[in-house]
Image (cartoon, rainbow, N blue to C red; front, side):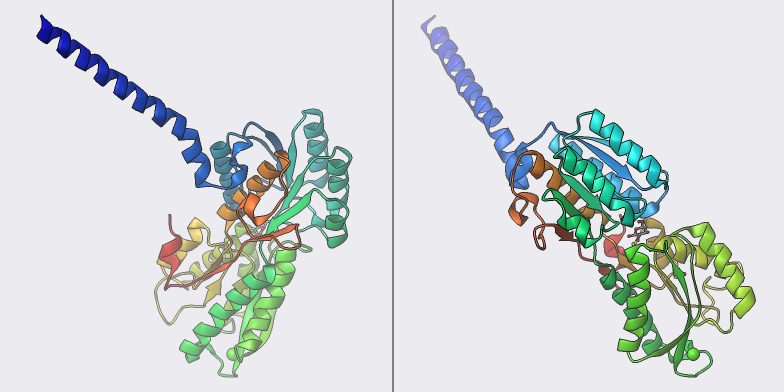
Length: 358
Ligand code: GAL
Ligand code: CA
């Protein structure tokens, strides 16, 4: 009997110890989670309205997915709407958000020069607003203390994509098909007025010059970031200029680079025959572009880091809603002049593309 009693007591004590340990572990859990990321992590439970210029855009879809993932981690709720490429629609969507008592706004304007009235709506309601991907002009950024911009330096992507072409021409002198020492290219441009279209066009050409090449632009036009439009345009150029004269294709984004490749492939080019290859470069490093690098049809691209752009935008809202000052410490990303968050572009070539494949 005594023995049983002793055993029973030991059991009870054992259970008590286990119980205590379990309790301690529970108490530690939230603290461990919070330690993983930025100090603003505790500000869960907020709601923000997000406008994307249009859902049917490959790169912006990667940003949108990254935003959702980060909001889920933080326990925040994002109301994300498709502005369907219409500025008036977006303006109405912002008005609707204001009636739904959101605590922050994140806007990807349809027309970046139309950012002013959007900023004013945020300001009148004293709401933090984060613009993404389409950069408002400086006076708009200066007119409100709760406005931030998350994006990437378009100049850098232009330079990196031009350098990929330079390296190719240095390694393959026969790429200068007419042997005149100049690079004859065609350029597929993004949407007119978009800083990424203007600056990628300018800086990719500058990179050719800096790399020691003269160039001749055989044709340059917008295909509005779009694959099908780029295929049409490239087909037109193939007919009017001739494939034997085109020495390179520069595209302001991957969707258009892939559109050009479709046109080239329909003529038997960029399908593996080394005598029928025209170097094509894009920007974004989309999943499809990385596959095209794997099969050899796309020479190179530049990572436009949508994952970090999306995460940074959500971190800013999170900190702003919590009333914190927006600093590198509170958002986890370096910040320029208190308002601009620049996410680095990365050159993607055959040597490193596998690092970016998911
Ligand atoms: C650019 C991107 C394009 C397109 C555009 C939309 O940064 O490279 O593919 O998504 O943004 O504004
Ligand atoms: Ca040439």
